[in-house]
Image (cartoon, rainbow, N blue to C red; front, side, top):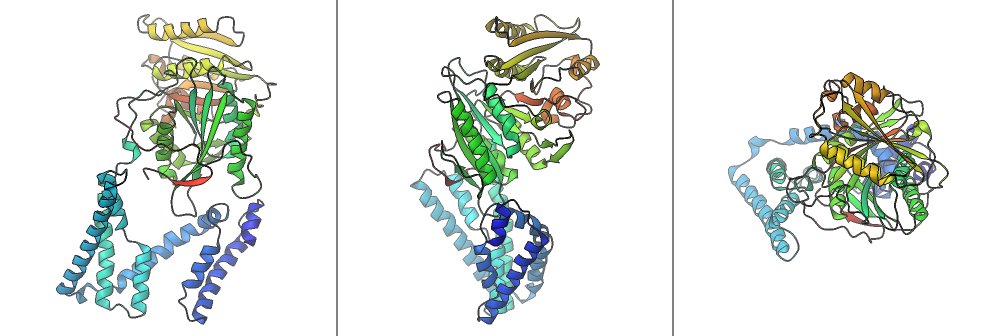
Length: 542
């Protein structure tokens, strides 16, 4: 507890703390033996005394994970394997053990199927759950080793139970993968895009937040989205918390309109939630904020995003870019699991998606909540569904009194067909007509000859912009030929990757928008109750 309190105050986990904890493990094992108990009892009690979750558990797991999973765990499995002797197995004994194992497995599967008849659970899901109940792992192996050391199991019995663990795992694992249908394979039939939001109806935005450093840019983006009583905004904030130090992924629904303690446990998450509540307070009657924390493995975090987007009818999901900038303009951190998550979200999301490249730390942009600063937004338009989606979202911002919107359209000299441009031209004309007389709306057209000219125009963008919105993919055009050859982040598209690179001199944040991809089947699942107060909800589809 002393170490836990020190970390809560902001102190890092030092080597002396690791030494104290490991010494406690050894002392606990010795004390158990002295008291006549098994040496595992003392370390087990010490483990139960360690507070779960952050900040101690993630720090401790991060320090010990490589040693345990890379050395001790494989060594223990190897020693257990060396204790087995298949030549001592008799066919009769193997037949009896096989019958017991198969019978027990079928009973578990059958029991779950019976329960499924009286609950809202499909036969496929019940079968998968029954298979999961049959999985055996390190706990069973430790128990068998203890029984063998106490001579409760002979060489033949030990070999049979170890082989049964291996056989069940080898059979069950591929069956689970074959029959389990997670939410990644289920999709929405209804169109959910910003373009489909009717005038005068609410805009639902799912914002995924990785850390508190992204909050200023996210709050400015939400505020610039111009919530009004006629067209309110529902913000579903999903805090992405990596699962470390606990057994099961959880979805936590936080209490609305409650100020949380920013000094105790979960201080960073509480600061994020308080900032969003402050945004709601400034827009009382126009904004509703619902805050959740998804505690899961980063490899599975996209499942929680899919489910939240569908359950809350989100029109757009905004996810963080996997690179974080330092104050000197260099790349501070690169999170590859977040990049993989973004790629999966782009591929299968049940609504439109925006990837937010946050450079707020570079320009120290002020909050526009206090109505004292102007937020400069640019929308780059080349053509295509993604550019249309980005334009519709940007056009909403033009109605905010503290936002200036500049729409920049790039045209190919002498080769653009008026017929091919008709849909784009009609949309732009509609936006310009709606903003006639709006002093905060500007429109310009840049006619370029080739991709080199387009790159030069992008490089000359006004450095005063705070946010640049652009579509991820564009209609085929000679303007894009060759620009993607050196792309570092294809998930951002050609233009988005150019704007997010370190070579781009602007300090503006970038929002890369992809309109919902359609024609992918149906997304099904239970609805998350947004009124649950700070209680843990097991995540679905994991």
